[in-house]
Image (cartoon, rainbow, N blue to C red; front, side, top):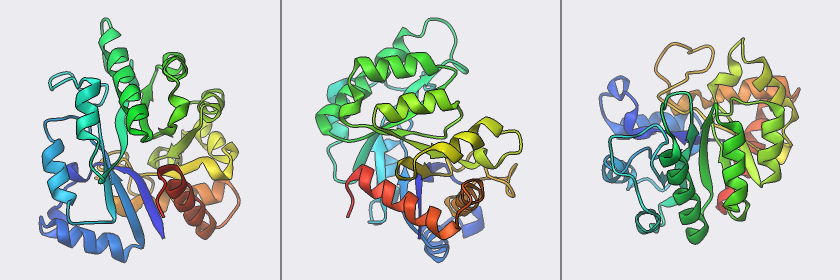
Length: 257
């Protein structure tokens, strides 16, 4: 059985499933995916996301505002705490820093990141971290805010082994998306070989970043299998071992039975 540790279920194209979320979830079950974590990126669509998955115990959610979102509400610590108290919410984010897509002074982005960390510590829920072209500041802020108290995930990992070590030392898990299957992702593949067996996760980030052999097409949680298969090849082990270990790691991080 597999777990997709990071997907955006409210953004996937349901047309292949008769525009019916229930039909899609049947396909998920048939693909031996036992659990999904759907990730918030803004507060405006958060209520609809919650309503969409409310009846599915095999789906949990996070609450947070993505570092690239600038048009919506920027949450305070208290607002994140209030929204994150539901049992359905098991993590805070996605949050972090993205210096690739954002321009100008980025103090607002760093403060948003700090607010998420502070809320996560009060709620005692792990963080879901997005980082792009911001390695040093990401690690610095995680250290300054004592994010190791709750840990979390460096999702859709695209950095080098040095950054991975820094995150691992702070108690974070490293999650690999379909990018690890790309031919040009040599540095990421090397990290996937080195990460300790008890500290890696797998994800799709669907509907984005479809893995080989679905690259260039809309992504779905069903394709997390391709990520697991590729990591098994990189680590010279079986698909079954990767599926089992990544599932155990997810449940350990989030304290799920």
